Image (cartoon, rainbow, N blue to C red; front, side):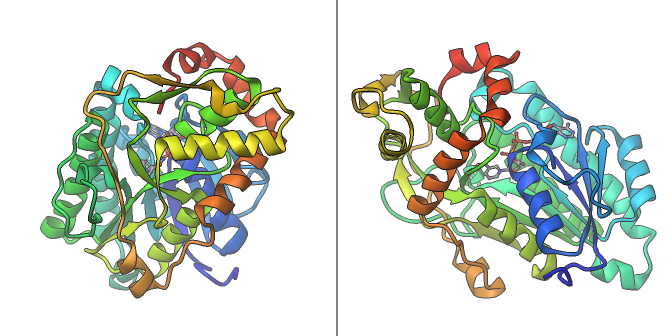
Length: 358
Ligand code: NAD
């Protein structure tokens, strides 16, 4: 296993976030890659999501902002990476509606800055090293807009983003494509469905419902809870991204998804039932805690990913079904109060309580 990516040096931006930390944990545990975690440590970051990383000789943490060109240049010069996995982003749709500016700054201008510094680095490499270099950009299926009752997003689906978040991600995907077409930077884009799993910041639907349901609080669900999302266990996503770094073809994009469509209401029901089984009982079903609230503006109805390209071309398959992954996730939150309690009690706790929806 450790001979995978054995002499790779990978800059992972956003490595203290939800998906980035899963990627760092996977690269350290299951490959031989040297990993540089580049993260500005916004509210969404948590270095406690990386147990055992500090002290690993194949790991470095660098506090830096992807919008800071001088900092990015220094990191490329210092570490001479063989690849970049760009996960640093503002990622919460509701926050993008309240305050879109920072989404444009980080997701668009930040990605532009990483691209420019990656290109400067790439141009200075030997032809051999250039052949190996990969600039991966991690994006979302939300760039494709919304689906009706049928069909799936494929790599050919036209972009039609509807929220400030998805528009900022779509913009960054276009920049990445253009840096390949115009400058020959070997870029790869991945577009993934909704992730869930351990170490997920509790403003997002699944951890929010777990923690509120645990304490018997209200469970706010947008509209009638009929919106459909396609869920992927975060560790399956991390494995997909490492595989794309190893075997992905520059200039290509890969859709990543778990073939696990669920309505939001179904997701909340499953969480309620798991909590009723695994957590101290409340004396009534936790489904009674559900409260339907005014829908989010521009709320996309359905996302569903066709993941057959990455399955066919790179041999990736998700290990977890939604049922197995969600049970693991609920069990993880029950066993890891030390990780989430400070977040709920901390400065953002009030905001979490007010916001309370995905
Ligand atoms: P997250 O919000 O949990 O983490 C983002 C990380 O980026 C944080 O550690 C934060 O400190 C860091 N960051 C933010 N701005 C930065 C900046 N200017 N400079 C350096 N670091 C900065 O997000 P996530 O859920 O882990 O998502 C990671 C990536 O995957 C994002 O690009 C997101 O668009 C994409 N994605 C997420 C999902 C999902 O379901 N969460 C699905 C598909 C794609």
